[in-house]
Length: 423
Ligand code: NAD
Image 1 (cartoon, rainbow, N blue to C red):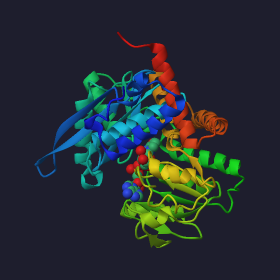
Image 2: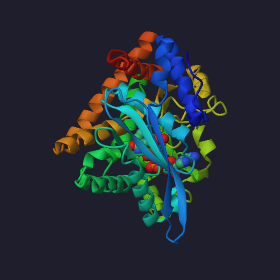
Image 3: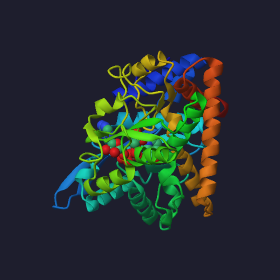
Image 4: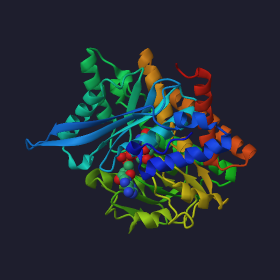
């Protein structure tokens, strides 16, 4: 018997992840008795974190960590600092991490963490105290053999350095393998910062090969100009693709002749936003998503492509850099538009966790690889995962998202079945 969605996680994004799972479980004919065990997170932690502000006052922030399944190894997943973070959102992201790791053959279950905070409103000192307090609260739950955090929205290499330092101080020795996405000088991997965006660009070029679209003359639109969107845009531009629209949380830009990314980067370094850049005209995020282009890369938040705009998006390739950018209802609309080739999130942005895995392996062995080795191993895994997904989609006559989710879910299901049920 299937239980209803546990109340603690019940949010639109968690329901969306469950809805995707249920459809795939029906398709794969997973027995009812195995479904809740596969679907719902193994464990989750909520922490109230009092943090001293620069003015002497104290603010209590809410932090979360969800570990989705522990069947194949330790859990792995990013930490998000964003004001809208909830336990349900983190749980959905952890579930997607599980399918992503299984799809790409990594020896991990999925996890995710987050703090409900706007990092832009904190000083560097406050951000460090939030990060250290969050890590301290999670000490009993994380570790190189249990759960390994990494950066996600609103967090970066500096955040990981503070997490690693806090954990190491408690352990009495240096534990670089407790987090990935660290600075290279602290045991981070060469290529990790760029991995997600470069992976997106690699898969875009594979989709272009499949569809016979040449890079020169192709156009791309990118929502979100952070780690994923920024590097994906720069890598696609190097491949000869024209980036005609870009946005961040504050607004968007459009230039039919292509946006000069080097000049845009100088503007963002000064103002911390793409808004106000004089090399393009201003557009809204809503306009950006329906701008005609060859490649559309949502690389910001989940639930951006919805029933409202799914019929209006005008791209040949939808490359989901973000996690969960397309709702299941929008998916149904896109499924009826065979002219759109979808590279689903759990495949498209998998480059990040793949190189995080390499970083963890390098840290555990204290033996480091050069960037060429990292990138060639990354592209090999992405290529295999891409081809497996394309072949599954063709053979079983389903869309790319369904194929990717099916491969991931099936592998976790098989692993759980073969390990058995204790006691
Ligand atoms: P980031 O914080 O570096 O950048 C996020 C960008 O999105 C910023 O430019 C921000 O202004 C913009 N943004 C936020 N809200 C927006 C909105 N409503 N409309 C338009 N833009 C908005 O984060 P990131 O690490 O690049 O992560 C982006 C997405 O990629 C997330 O969904 C994350 O889960 C996913 N992801 C990240 C990684 C990684 O390695 N960093 C790996 C896999 C998936």
